[in-house]
Amino acid sequence: MRNHGYQTYLDQEVLAASPLKLIQLSYGAAIESVRAAQRFVCQRDIRARVRAINKAIGILTELSRSLKYEASPSLSQKLAGLYDYIVRRLIEANLQQSEKPLAEAEALLCTLAEAWKACAPPPLERGGVPTDSFLSAEGHVADVTLRDAYVLQDASATQDTRLIQDSCVMPGVPIAAG
Image (cartoon, rainbow, N blue to C red; front, side, top):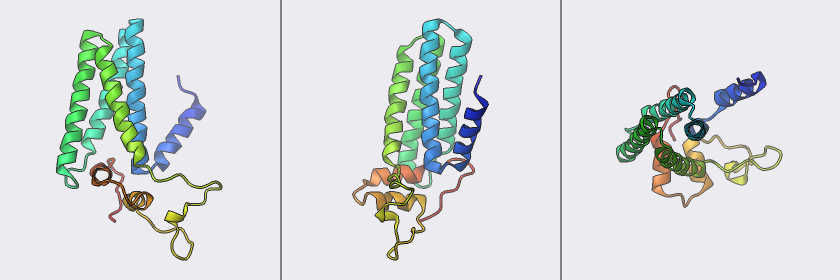
């Protein structure tokens, strides 16, 4: 059972999260579910294993449904295919009661999570003051869209990184056009 204080904190974090942060939280939850399923396979706890795998499948389904195909059809199709492959590995792990497909699913999810972490804007300086790249010429915080923040963060960012950012949205959370 979850601690009420922790649940309140988590609820607030999700409600205040940017689209990128929601994606990162989703990956974190999927990875934790797969890890829990691995533990439950070892413990031979069938009910808990099934719950953990179903949770991971549900998260991957939402990530797949949230792809923005019109921004980058090719990248969105590749991500959807990867999500589908991971779901199939999770189903296989559940049917075979095996850790190997779970380990593969975890590794793929961790790789994707690291890629999304690299898309994050730079952290605020001490005291909550934005770094210079987010200041306007007058020294005020610039009105920057989420997508623009990535370009400001690293002008040498690859086109693929920008495509990843543009190709995913969370349902009900619009990304402002740049």
